[in-house]
Image 1 (cartoon, rainbow, N blue to C red):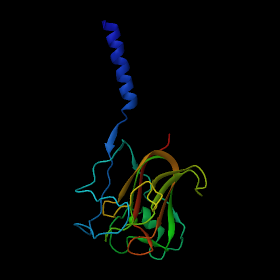
Image 2 (cartoon, rainbow, N blue to C red; image 1 turned 90 degrees about the vertical axis):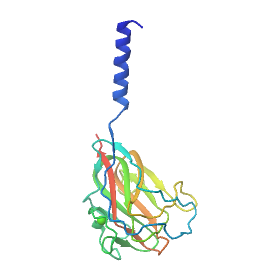
Image 3 (cartoon, rainbow, N blue to C red; image 1 turned 180 degrees about the vertical axis):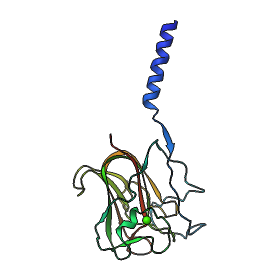
Length: 214
Ligand SMILES: [Ca+2]
């Protein structure tokens, strides 16, 4: 290869690398105090994800990604929660003790966070409840620009019994990290349908990691 061709080749390679290698950093979140340790009690749920050992592996996100949900308005299918208030979902407190969660009515219910503008979303972490090992049923997480979720809906997680492609999981202090793959939208909606201890639905905190859409 002669020198000008070699130089040109290097220049092209550098450009391609710069375009494709977006700066990635490990997602940072402050975890609450663990409230139960050791092997959880056996839970009789099909398609259950085995708990991982040690701390959750790093999840890489583009540099500049932040929790866009903090302090944002929360609405729900049950606007008069049994216990607590909807603002607890985005108040930044993830501790698992009493008073930290909002409790919604039995059966299938949802909460929805308005990010106020469209964003590219890379990860969502949800803490339903973590002072006891339990599984929340039929967890579905969706992103849309439509506040009624009647169109342009992207489902990023679905462990609905029998039909969902994702596994059921046991709640822990680490919360459930869901890969949102850069899906764009203004609203995030999370469904559940009771849990293995009772028919109620709880949320301690939901974090939505992303960057405002360009
Ligand atoms: Ca909270």
